[in-house]
Image 1 (spheres, rainbow, N blue to C red):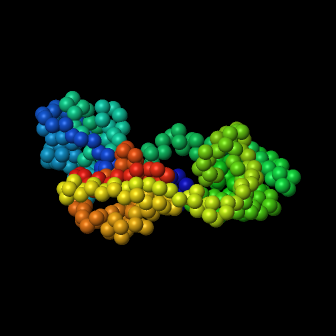
Image 2 (cartoon, rainbow, N blue to C red; image 1 turned 180 degrees about the vertical axis):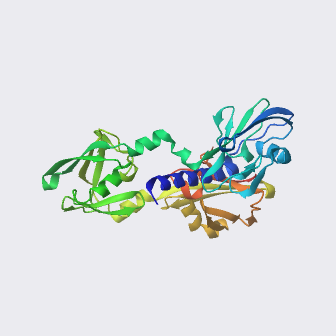
Image 3 (cartoon, rainbow, N blue to C red; image 1 turned 120 degrees about the horizontal axis):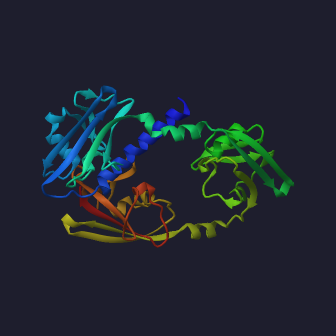
Length: 354
């Protein structure tokens, strides 16, 4: 499978994941009352372009579409992770392998699926057939094919090595360029949790316990690893060998140990308990796994990481409620497996209805 296809699949997967998270945890509230809205359906390949005006007291677009199913000749998958997934309209059947109904609200791309788009009086909605390849767009395609000229300087002070290379490449990320030029750079590497990790370069084998290759982009410290640095025409990259002092085991353990609190609120049971934990875990899910007995937790590993089924003796009805996560009083932006633990943080799990 080529890189472009993989990119498209990756974007689509991300949209599905984000859509599911949004629908479950962050979807907006509907607005009550009578509304008049416009709906346009566009299928260019069949010369379909029809406009409708509906009066409705429904709160979400998905509900209106269901109500007008006969008028719109609508078919849909109601079991999609994103809510309503439209499979056909006005006699046109969607080819789910290559196209989809794109939604616009007042001329702007919708941020989520039909089931979560709140109806507002006077709004104009457009449902338009588009190809999955439209995710790339012509500009992105041209950028992918465009060849870039960059330089890479390798500095190994301990070995008096300072070499600069000029490369022409159409790769998108620095890690890919280094893989392609592994013979020229005499690179040995492995793929770790954060992407490409160099073990040896220009014949020099790194002591991973005491040194690392520091990355600079145009003279500035890189903000991410090699696999996350986007290659731009004219960029100058540096890989500079640097040392760090290995810590004693006790010192490292003390530094890694973090104290956090976790509050569990189950309003329907008048249950509210706060726990204080010291942990070396990096993510909140790891702490919860460590403390399953204390928290009386039952869980499963789902598409988005750890998913709590039961806590403090309370079994959640997954069809109608969930545990909302707060970090220092703010809504979490990701699930338990994505929340990085920081010393002093206060976490809260609140039972909420969908």
